[in-house]
Amino acid sequence: MTQRIPPIGPADTAPLWRSEIGQLDSLLGSPPPRRPAPAPVRSRRGLVLKGLGLLGVAVVSGLVWLVVMPKDTPTGTPAPTSTPVGEFAFTPSPDVPEPLKDSDCAPHAYGQTKTFLTNTPCQQLTRGLYTTTTPDGLTVYTSVSVVRMKTTEDAAKLKDLTTRDGTGNVNDLVKDGAVRVPNLTTLANGGFAARQQDRDVIIIESDSVKHAPDEAAHNALMKRISNDAFRLAADLTS
Image (cartoon, rainbow, N blue to C red; front, side, top):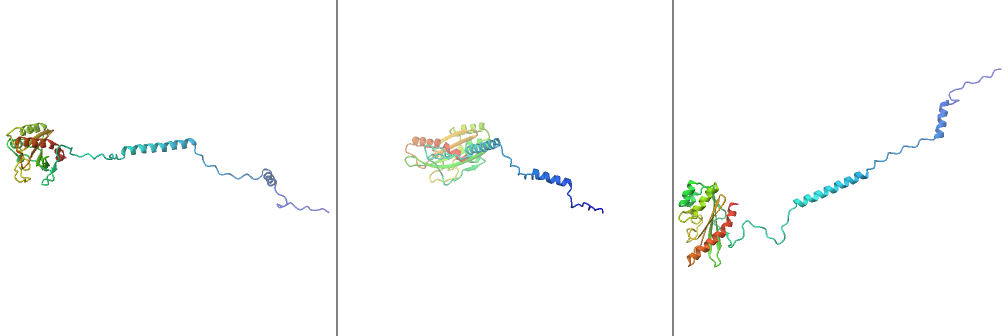
C-alpha cells in the first residue's frame, strides 16, 4: 500500500527570502530614529560685527544731536537788541507808530534838495519820529529820514547837497505836517546831522519847543542828540 504525501501549501512553509530578512532584522535591530537637524549657530564674528555696527549708529546719532540741538542762552546774559545802546534813550512818537514810507521824495523836500530829487528820483523815503529827554528834563523831538537812491553816486551828491547851508533839505515830519507839536513848526532850527551808507542817505534833525538861553549851547546839544540817533535808522529800514 502506497502512502500519499500531502502537497505543501503556501501556509506550511515561509519563503526563504522572508525568513532571511527576518533573521537579518533581528541581528541588526531596528534603525535608530532620525534626530532633528540642529539650528545653525551664528558665528561669533557676525555677532561682533553687528554689535560694532549698532555702536557706530549710536555714536553718529549723538554727534548729530550735538550739532542740531538748540543752544541755550547763558543765564544772566541779556538777549541782543536790534538798536544799540547810545547816550540818549529814544521813544517812538505815538503819532507815528510805524515808519512812513513814500516812493516819491521830491514832494517831501524843499529848496535845491527838492530840485535835485525831482531830476534824480529816489527809490524810497522812510521817516520816523522819536522823543528823548535831556538831563535837565527838556523834551526833544527827533526826525529820522532815510533816503534810498538808485546809485551810490546819487546818494553821495544828495548827502553833499543837504550838508551845505541854504540848499534846503528833506522835510522833517513836523515841517511836513505829519505830526503837530504846539509852538513848533519845524526841527530845522535845532541840530542837524547827515550820513551816507551805501545808497542810503540818513538825515536827522532834532529840536525842542523851548530853547536854552544860550542858543549856541542849545544847538550843540541838539546836534549831539541827532548824531546819537543814527542807530535808529536800522530799525526804520529793517
